[in-house]
Length: 126
Image (cartoon, rainbow, N blue to C red; front, side, top):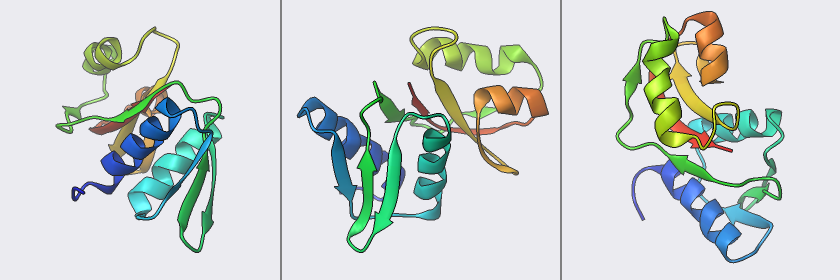
């Protein structure tokens, strides 16, 4: 088990998906992981709720989610700053989201471009 709670949780979700399960319970949690799951829930990719044992995640509509390592820094002032990462991690231009950690919190790459916010890439999902 590594020190990166977000990466471990996303790996557990993908392992459960490969095992043809529709939900998983994550025992370790952090504020960053909760924020990431809320962002995914807003985009209707998954649903979750906190329980005594940890976090119960239902991911029927999820295709893939992964943590981005190393956490690349992006400026977000222009479209070219994020474009190479969108091409690298997402299967199509309008399919999926990169998650950017900014000084205003976690947001998708589209919202970061609208607000001209830069930050670190945390994960992607579609």
